[in-house]
Amino acid sequence: MRKYGIYRYGSNSANQPLCNKRLVAIVEASSREAALKKARDLPVTVYHNQHLDAVAQRFVPKAEWDEVSGAPVEWI
Image (tube, rainbow, N blue to C red; front, top):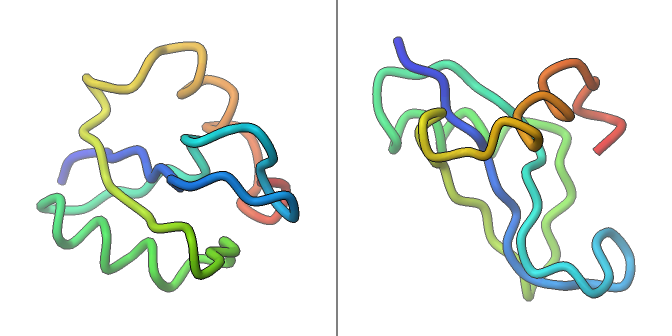
């Protein structure tokens, strides 16, 4: 199993104004596709102009990873 960062793409005034990309969760999965499937079950709000994507841990900046790794998903 590998760790993936789940990014929400798309600016929306309700949950991420003036920010096109935000790390919203971290999941463990066997593949990127499996990580995205897990992400769809998380309590993360995604509006019509937004979408989720999974990125392998090695491609996520450490500061972003550290910020999200200790936060409950509901906080994001």
